[in-house]
Every structure is written in C-alpha cells, then in structure tokens.
Image 1 (cartoon, rainbow, N blue to C red):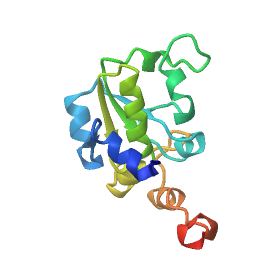
Image 2: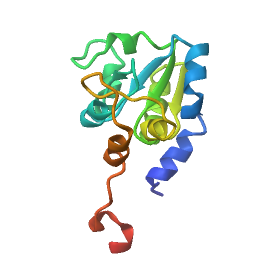
Image 3: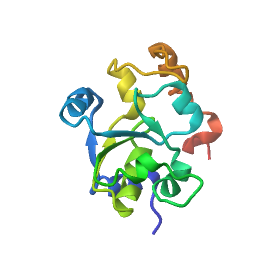
Image 4: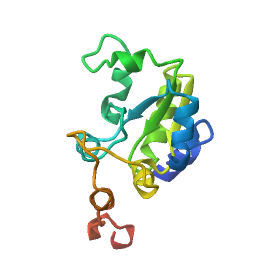
Length: 156
C-alpha cells in the first residue's frame, strides 16, 4: 500500500521531536551548541533564513553528513552528538530530513515545527543572502505562492 506525503510526515513524527518557533530563543539559550541546519533549496535559503544557520539542501543531505564526498560538510559530520535543529519552509521536509539523519547515527535531532514560515509569523528576524534583515511582508509572499490549477487534486 502506498503512502502520501502526509503519511510519511506522520510516521516520521513518531520518532522526531518538534520545536515551535516561539520556543526557539529559549532553546538556544539553554542549548547554545545547537547546530541550525537549513535543508531548503538554495533560492529559499538565500531569500530568508535564521541567523547562524548552515545550509545543506535536502538533495545532498546524506552525502553532506558523511566523509569522503564532494558534498561533505565537516561541521555537520562532526555534529552527531550535538543538538541539531533541522529547518525547512513549513516543518515537513525537516521532519523527513531529521529521520534520515537519525538513521545515519545522529543522536539529538529536532525539527522546527512550522519552519521559516512560522518564524516569520512569530516575528523572529530572518536574514537574506546579503546578511540584511529580510522584510517580513516579502518573506510572507515569497513562501506562500498561490497554487496553480494543475497542482490541485480537484482539477485532476
């Protein structure tokens, strides 16, 4: 029996904890060693991201987590015992990425529930590629594009 995207998320959430955006500041105060790992696509990360987060697109995550690949990210490889907060746009891809990382031996993983969108909605400052504060209205529009008719199940 095949599963839907939402089924995969629900299954992963049985093994991965989530953190709400409004709890982020307190979490980082209590766990300053936390690695903020943004797994979104490059254009998403460039548009708006959390300060001090590292960017490893989901498509190369497994190789970035291991030595001996062109995609290897040493800070990530060495973070297997550190708290890692996985971040995406809305908190779904990050749950799946965190589950993958758990399978790769990472011990302390959390997914940011509601993702960068939730941060923006909670008035947490996000930064653009130039390191400047991203305009919250622009971020909201950028991360909430309208669906096209051919993307809607009702039109299939």
